[in-house]
Image (tube, rainbow, N blue to C red):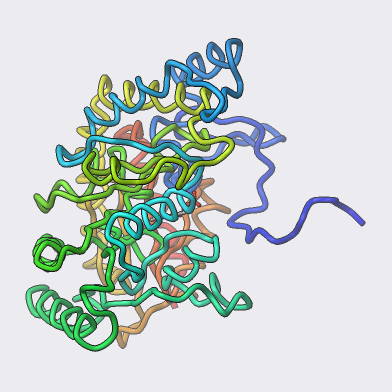
Length: 419
Ligand SMILES: Cc1ncc(COP(=O)(O)O)c(C=O)c1O
C-alpha cells in the first residue's frame, strides 16, 4: 500500500504544493503556479495574506478552542457585529458554524422551526453540499448524489433560468421559470407546507450562472406573498467575489437568511448564517449548535479577512479585474466560436464551451484546462452539469498582469485544442 490516505477525493491536479502567497502556489520542487481556483473560491484575500496570518497566529497563542456552550470568547460578538456591517441590511443576527454544508443545514433547520413548515424549494443546477440533506438539495451533477439514495424527503426542485442553454430570451426564461414554480406550489408543495426557497444568486458548481435580477425579485415577491422565507446561499458568491459583498445585493432583494462560508476567512474553515433577528430570536434555545462552531481562530481569520476586503477595496478590484477578464474573454469569442457564452459578475466568471452545433463540449473544456496547467502553469477548474464551463475564480487580490497572463494562457489553450 503506497499511501494510507483515502482515495475518495477527485483530483483537479496531481500537484504536491508546499506553500502559497497571493495568487501563486509553489510545489515541492519549487515550481510556481498561478492559482485561479482559489481553492474553490475560498482564498479571497489570496494565499496567506499577512494580516490574516498575523491574526491567526496571535489568536492561536490565546485560545485554540473556546467551546461556545461552555463559555464565550470576545471574538464571537465582534464577528457578529462585523458581519452585520457587511451583510444586506435585512440581516442582523448570526449563527457561526464550520462549513458551507453545515451552514446550509442550519439555514434549513432555522426555516423549518420558525415557519413550522416541512418543505424546501431549491433550483435546478444548484450545489449546497455533501451531507445527506444538502445532497438532496443538490442537482448540479448526479454524481454528487449517486450511490447515496434515498436522500431526505421534502426537497422540491424548480427550474433555474438559463437562457443561453434553453435558447430563450432572458425575459422569457424568467417568466417561464416563475410560472413553473407557481405550478410546483399548486401541484407538489403547497405554500402552507413550504418553509423556504433556497437559491444561489449565482450558481457556482452549476456553471457560474447568474440568476437574472428579475428572477430573484419574482421569487422574493412570491415568497413574501406566501410567508415562505427567501434564503440566499452565498457560500461561493459572497465576500466580494461578484464585486459586491453579496451577490444578492445586485437585485435589491432583502433576503431573510444568508448562508456564508468559503471567502469569509481566506481558507480557515468557518461558516455562518445571518438572518433577520425576528427569525433568529424564535429559534428555540438548544435547537442547534455544534462542538466547533464559533472557533476563536476561525473568528480571528474572518475578522481579518473582512477588514482586508474592506480596507483594500477588494470588491472594487473584483469589479475592475472582472471587467478586464470578461472583456478579454469576449474578445476571444470572434476567433473562437466554441466560446459560446462568457458571463460574470465580478471575479465569478464562467465560459461555456460548445461544439459547432451548440452542444456542451466537456472534452474541449478538459483539454483547455489541461493545457493551461501543463503549458502555462495556471490552475483552472470546470463547472456545470455537463462539465463544459471553465470557471474563473482567482483570489480577489489578483493583479492586472496576472489576469493578462491568464488570458494569454487561455487563448493558447483554445488554439491548441482546436479540432
Ligand atoms: C453554493 C454552495 N453552497 C454550499 C457549499 C458547501 O460548502 P462546503 O464544501 O464548505 O460544505 C458549496 C461548496 O462548494 C457551495 O458552492
